[in-house]
Image (tube, rainbow, N blue to C red):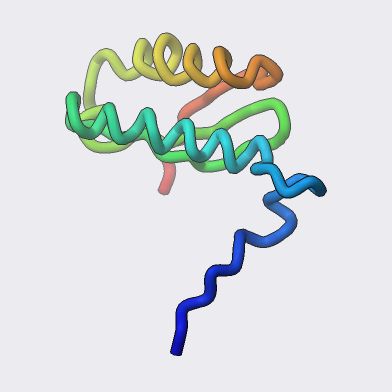
Length: 96
């Protein structure tokens, strides 16, 4: 049986087939997480986006790091806002 090469559900794509802002945010967060994992032993995971606020979960070494707030505000939030100026806030959640 061949694997299906279907694209993601239409609800995550714009009418013209481009990636939605949520998909692009997920991709950026995954990219940041790969760097953080490789060089710092931590991670960042996309949780949700409500149109104005992005929620992420910090993991690995970031969970107990005293620089966690700086990583979130300066690096993650700064990078997200650079590429998505319409995003008003990036906040961390703790529950799993």
